[in-house]
Length: 106
Image 1 (cartoon, rainbow, N blue to C red):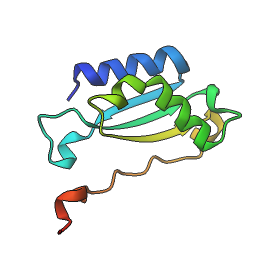
Image 2 (image 1 turned 180 degrees about the vertical axis):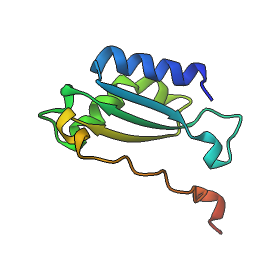
Image 3 (image 1 turned 90 degrees about the horizontal axis):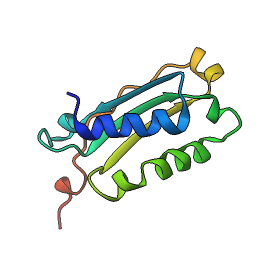
């Protein structure tokens, strides 16, 4: 399912990272929020990540998507690779949702 938010995230990352490969997946349906656009998975391959550590890559993407993260996006799974890393990597499957505080008892 492609939403306006998915497209917005995709366009922002394309503009800022000039990626060789990019995927933005709305995984809200995996978290019991079928009508909500709140959980996303991003797979991006960019030379912008060449000299950056994982934390720096995440900070860069979080900065690019600051508006979305301050609003509708609740969870963002990031899989960020340099082109060399991408050639020898596989993207992990998203884990099943554990429901967060829904399963906690008071």
